[in-house]
Image 1 (cartoon, rainbow, N blue to C red):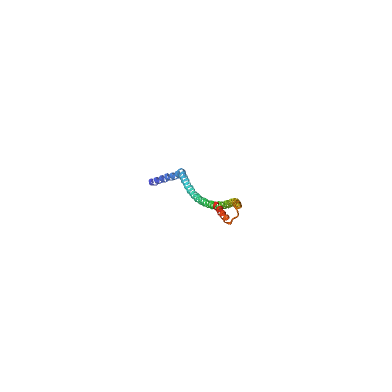
Image 2 (cartoon, rainbow, N blue to C red; image 1 turned 90 degrees about the horizontal axis):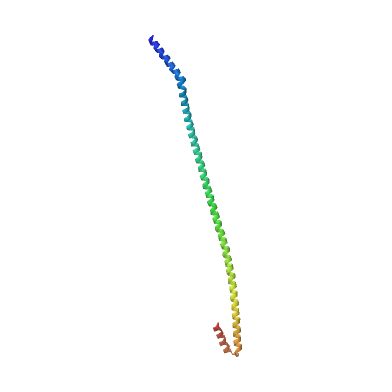
Length: 156
């Protein structure tokens, strides 16, 4: 019976150990494991959210870059259009200015021609009067008249 009492004593000790472990040791261990599992799950969820946020941010960045490129293209097109307008305006202004300069030059030339014609008329009239005066002072002789006209031609 001694074998049975020892066995019974060991069984009772084992039962007390199991009860003690279940009552005082097992709950904190399971709580710690549950908390750790929860932290791991939270970390994995946060990592997944971070990955999704990163993908969303990359999409937003790609969209912003695309928009910026589109705006840059629009700005370049607008600048080229404005440059073309400026060149056309400058050409029109140059044409207008050149037409004005040509008109002014023609007017000045016309005035100069009129002035030269008037001077020439005056000189021709003076020559005619001088020639007529010399012809009238001398006697009327064809040879003398021819010589006189030749000398007048030579003077002028």
